[in-house]
Length: 472
Ligand SMILES: [Zn+2]
Image: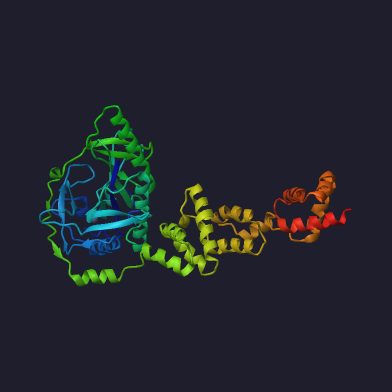
């Protein structure tokens, strides 16, 4: 029996400022250690001021995760000595005397199973550690970048309800979709969503794998950890409580430190940030202003477009696909077919290239052109599928089919010429075809091959039949 719990950290897109200071929360392309001030560098005497937007976002996330919201906003200091935290404590929320998390007891449903969420809390991000070789194992030293230090984070802590690596990945994908719909995180920023994965197998202690950067990596890191722990137990090695690091280059976990206990952190209420009572009206106002959430969007896609549940889920759990679908659906009304092509063809091609839809040159206009050409019989199904990678590269499909001679041949004379040539080369077959209708299919195949499948097989069949009747 495997038990997996996640602590997911998400950057809060706190409208351009960090959690406790006025430095920018967007540090993309900035020189290291230029997006800083005395507060987020942790200089003595600097005073933090809490960002109101962070509270709004936390309340929205808590509501989306069906949680009970605390009416007190309070902060504690979590002490630890580590290079990425210059004041030697992190400002966070703690579930203890004088402090409370922002929300408790929620859930996310995956494949009909409720994964419980213990609590969510607001905290500040530490600095970023940079390993010059990309790997913690082979680097001789570590560089520190404080640009993201003090960015608002939401920590989302689950109960150990996940049972396998795939479930953990799905959980993170659904959570990501919820956060995207709420627009609380800028997923363009590197490290916008990271997970600490707690993994324990039967007969061993809980091991925490720190800082896993994506749902896909979470699946890989957990699978690795389960295999490692099981192998160790089989050879008689005890699994101790420890913290490990996920090396995403080498795809292994490596020991980081033995796990601290909660006492080691010496939590106490932060005297710089006294507890603040959140009025009911404030919370009600935030909840009323919330945008559409994935659950209701799935229901709406089913009702509005007649999609089946699977299609609606695949689209909504990758918000970009759902947005693209709804944009295209304004013009193209065969909704189920549109959803199928996006899910099966477009998504597959994007995955092959490991790019996201929004980073490709695909437009709804081009996709609709391709579908319309197949609908009116100008191109074959095969050509339609072959065109998808072209339009992902931004190539105009109509020009492409003309330039590359991909239009279906409907001209009877042209087809008859091909048929005559095939017949004259296969006299023996033609004789058999007159006795045995099955052999006609062979001739159809020959003609289709000759025209590189750019003909309607039914039309070719009929033309061959009438030709055979002519030949006595
Ligand atoms: Zn600052």
